[in-house]
Amino acid sequence: MYHFKQVFTAACIGMLVFGVTYITLGSILPSVADKFDLDEIKSGTLTSILPIGVMVGSLLFGPIVDRYGYKILFIITTLLIIPAFEGIAFTESYFLLQVCIFVIGWGGGILNGATNALVSDISTGHKGANLSLLGAFFGFGALGMPFLLGALSEHFNYTDILSSVGIVLALVLFFFLSIRFPAPKQAQGFPIKEGVGLLKDPGLLLIGLFLFFQSGTEALANNWTTTFLQKGISITGKDSLFILTFYIAGLTAARLVLGYILKVISSYYLMMISLVLSIIGGVILLTAHTYSQSLMAYIINGIGFAAGFPVMLAYAGQLFPALSGTAFGIVLVIALIGNTIVNYLFGILSHSYGVYLLPWLLMITAVCRIIILFLFKKNVSSKIKF
Image (cartoon, rainbow, N blue to C red; front, side, top):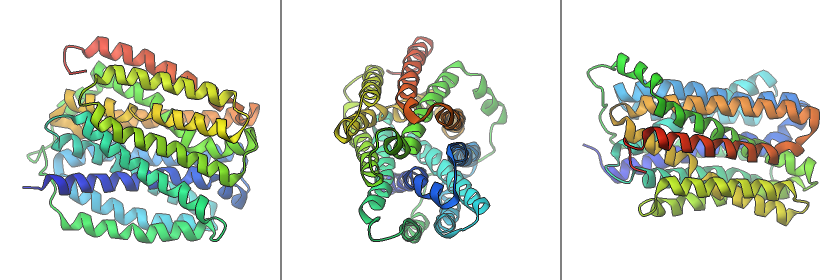
């Protein structure tokens, strides 16, 4: 037997670690680009390594947790993330930097998928609400890195800050070791035929396609915000980090509120409202010329992005409760393909046309998600609760 609060806490800590790993590269990208003399295309290539690592982790975690459970995967992943952080902080080798970024992406991908699947498994009701609360801890983790870098950059080098964070993560390992996790759902053997069959399910594929654009959009905001604000609007590096911090704060606060709102309001209509907010945020950013206008745009975008992953993953959990880890893995891999493609595409576009295209891509991806959400509801309205 396991204790619900302890397991939910472990999932929240794991998601917090994922938030730290996922936002770090975007926060330090200008400094890393200066250190290794990277142009826009090389920077885009570097940022694409992180989601590739996350993708590999997402491919692995599903069948493993369905067959063997969660605890061993949480422990091994944390053990590998810690030295990767130290490597990013101190390496002078561009190749080793790429390896370390891949490792934290791999570990983050496992933690992201496994924590979501874990909360879905232990939630007998209100999956969307619990997943939204879990998602808020991604925001707490992601919020910490740009805040620390912005607040401490005048006194410490970014390498010292990263190194200290890596050491603190060692405490997480001891908590994972000390608690009991749920037993595996497929302890007698993984049902390969049923797992492969998920790849043909139209509802699951539509969830994956939605998250393809959702993940791509969030990647643009996470990885290119500081560069866009510094080059496109001439905002200082310190101020751009604070804007990134407020963007994550808006996303985090919205997910905390969604944990309660989703218990009383249709998730479908809430998603539509969120997507409209994303378009509004893109329009404001497109016309922004000042710090305050940019700040407003990113806060609105953060609120608009908040519902995407929790709501769509809750739908996946409702559709496939017996194979939740595998189902989550499939849609997260599709999402991360979108993350990689959109990141790399924007690197090429910004090299040719400038970073000014960022607001346009944010709006285009929002329109794509509105269309996909409509098709998804039409396809599975009789199978799950909206």
